[in-house]
Length: 338
Image (cartoon, rainbow, N blue to C red; front, side, top):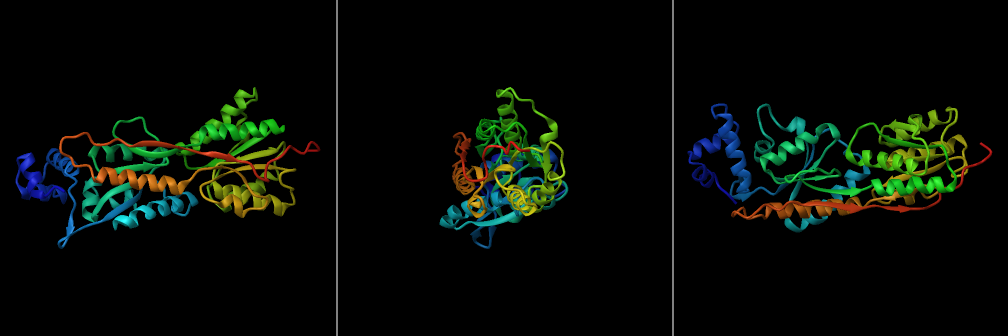
């Protein structure tokens, strides 16, 4: 691990200047600060509390938090399974609040004693991940992919399986197929929407915008949307819910209304854990192992943290894990009487 004196010697400046740059002192020029931040990240500088190096890993939101989602819960559970073996502690951060004015992400992490970060992002905050990578801070993005030789990520492929799922509904005889997609854009939900559109186009069916619904990604969002669904003319006979809790909300509410599943409505959901087995009927779902994504993310971060920085190329870790379609009790042929 690098020290303040070693960084100062490498850059040809005083240890005091390095210390001031790390602590965002206004007397340090911006170019000097950027040089110090990059050297600090190259040397894997770690702050110490007393004589002990900090062992904090951040689970950091660059945009809106989705902390209550099954996906994030499973991610952190998977990370913790690996972190415990190495004695790391997990901090949960909102980057927009944690970074002070005129402070870089790396400086914030030094101030908080953070050695590496697992990043959650949305379409609107992908640029933040790019900025963090440009600084050279050890970080891995989860649930998103980048065309970049600097950004490390662990993600899953849900587009091809979404296409398979919608094709299955078409084969069952459904012609009015809706999709309930999150109101917050990210690459995962974009992939699922693209898979939906591809399946319809391949089958020679039109992509009708009136069957593409924006629904908050939580149970109550699914409940409220199901109530609106019941009043729609020419409502869909099948629905793909791209979020687990949205699917749970829709499934429970339409049965409260009195519909039979799958006779009156076929539902395909998305499952990050084992939620499909907690519904009745058991939910047909596209499944991804979010715990495995969390484990892989920490292992990738661990590789970055152990990089010696002795002139060898820093590893670039970009992995895409598969998803699977599981057929259960919520899909069937449409009720031709409707």
